[in-house]
Length: 179
Image (tube, rainbow, N blue to C red; front, side, top):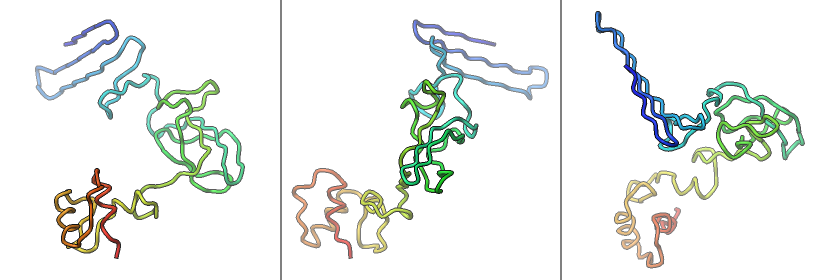
């Protein structure tokens, strides 16, 4: 069975096949496609992607311009990655979409441009303020970003800390003293 629904700028195709004699084989497929040949990305709610987008892990062209060693060559990287080591010096470079859109090639055929250092925001690998804010507290009595605002306020009240200027949860978390 195949069902196709068309609108001005969107086509939805639903296909289902079933082996009736054995009842074992079932196949279900749902592929929304718009009039420009774009297919809905299953990993996002509303992003449409080019139907010709490379598969994750497929090697694609990237333009490298390393800020540390000056490496300036065309390099192939795996599609779907967000960083790649510079072939010249080994530092990790951020892979930015060449056109600003995932899976789209620029005029020179590049999917990525690598021209700045990759900064990991993982708490165990970074000393930046953002990562510190989301680090779990070692003290079970001391709240952290994973606690509720009322729990954080209760702690701040107990320790006589003024939070009247705080508007967002991050503001409250910043007021918790580091020991």
